[in-house]
Length: 520
Image (cartoon, rainbow, N blue to C red; front, top):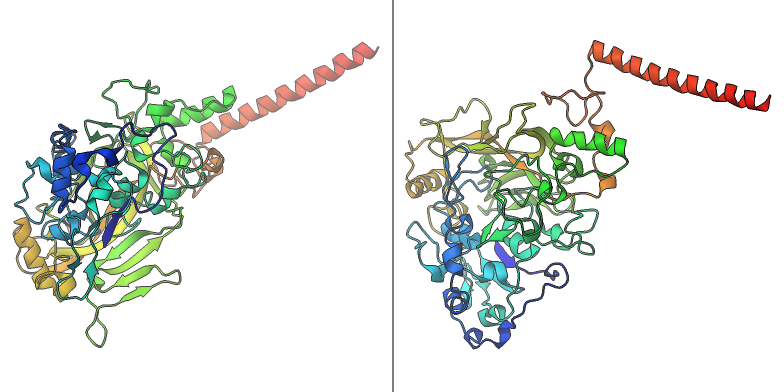
């Protein structure tokens, strides 16, 4: 997979945000540049603190201690249910790292020249092909070696001279493609957002607000707000003032709209605003995900990988729409479009199953768990993508395994289709104990749904929840009229309705009598 950065033509952001500097006039950027690091050295002559700031962020370290749980997390060491793990696959996976040259555990995270400025700030033509350890290609290169396939070089000077603000497509070059392809992981992030219509997302509508990611995910010294690892699940506060310095997360809905956003007539607004004490905004305003025409993976079975043709060659199968549903390298997939989310209580705390955690293979293993007590003040009912995996584990130690897959050598699964070798190489790279015996276990992973916000007239209708078998079937901790029934409440409701009907009737009779008396 080759990640193209800013391959599509997308407006930078809202009007009036053009740069005050023309980088094509800077002698330092005249080039030629023989490496990404050479470009960074030129950038740092003016932007002296940029690398120092970047190196303090999770985008750089891929390493994080969750303040809520104390777990040691981050892409560098975590296990997922998609591509499974990074270690042993660095030269392939690190095309999505904002650095150059991370090919193994010896990468120097203290070298500011290895920070990749162009990954986020290019305005077109930039690419970091998988397999090159996060380096752009500056000379024509055969990859994989001996394959007869070549990667063409890019002009780093030209790209450096046209840098600008981050945009949806620069962020999306990595965040859309997590899990190995467009839309695979998140469900609410894919390339359709580069040219979003109003129907797809009211904030990113290319002909409307045309938000960039950074309009919500505000950065301070290159630290970007918002995280799926530590989520702000409830934010019961008014809107932030523009430019306000606060410890609150500026990427929440409430940061702009406040916690009582509905402004319809008094009765309707009061009724809708009362829902915000229980529901996340996204639960009503994102009726479905993967709505832009790009399917998302809903299931991935690694145990099916390794099937070959009669000639011993890997192959792919596609559905009627041309989407891959089987790949010898990766296994079998279930895809989804226009998917109705699942719903659950969530207070923002997430715990993860890590590689040294013991699992129970007799049941589906949760890769992550969203916490939240039903009805608790700090929790809301959130929409989520529920993803099902089947992935390798150590059958004696009952721990998840990370395979070596993507680096061209005899131990990588994509080049030998030998699980025993791939898992042994992965265990050696991660330092995890491995018995040498493996099997496959069913897993589950949750993803919060928070993009692809629909127009208000396409929000979830009242009847979709306030009914038996509706969207919130099985959600405890809240009484939902129409779904739930309590004899006393039902009687009170009928009495209130009858009282209202009687009041209207008496009022009508009184008006008629008054009218008749006036005629006399």
